Image (cartoon, rainbow over all chains, first blue to last red):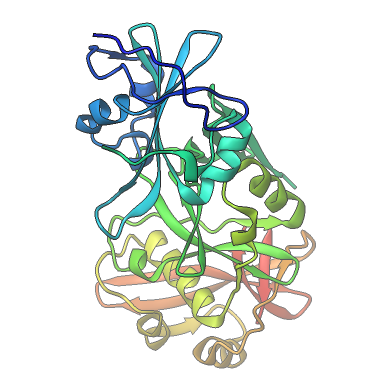
Length: 122
Length: 211
């Protein structure tokens, strides 16, 4: 069932729903996502997708929905950062882990919330 | 001289092609391209292939240079090509990457060990030598130079060079061959240039370091 509660505003430019709605869908990966899946940041384990897609999301006017989750890659001593998945229709069109050292400038360039406002991976 | 060309693509501007002339140094993720680990700046490149390799970003004089990682040098499948950026080229790279600019201030100075590691990597690549090899092993197995025997032997064995890169001048440079007899390999190593009676290590095509 789709959850469609749009009540939590985490930053000025975006609206985040408190719970995601993507976990129940079966998404396909876009050609770009498949082609870029060659480094750890573009190819983190696929079994994390469902967890990221359950997190709060951002609706964009062009139909994109962006999902964010604070976590780490490469284990306990790994890199801290943000899982960022974007869907459009039935496609995952973007799938990246962004290290926290990059998040400030990446989020600013793309109108995304600050690290402190992103909930952890469930 | 060619300059680095950066081409950023992707809906989120997360992909970078970086080339100089016809040589592609990176065709991959812009996310995490530069990182800061234990106060050391690292650059993650794929040299146009699928695997990614780390090198360290350091500075000397007016230029920025990548140096191989100690851990990478111990691996047979490690890939490293020295890259030298002038300030303008490096600033452009810093601008398109996403790393917190405060972290870029942690850039370290190149030291002599870095230069030894660059030369060691050059030797291993040119002569396809795998396994553990130290720079001292090369020094100990030099048997001759094509010119400047005594002077060069002293410079290289003591590495008494100033760590100061200069743009290579195209006039009157002469290749000096270093003959190295590593067991199983007789190597003619063209790593030294002579320009106006001075000897230089050839670090990349357009940058040299005076001994």
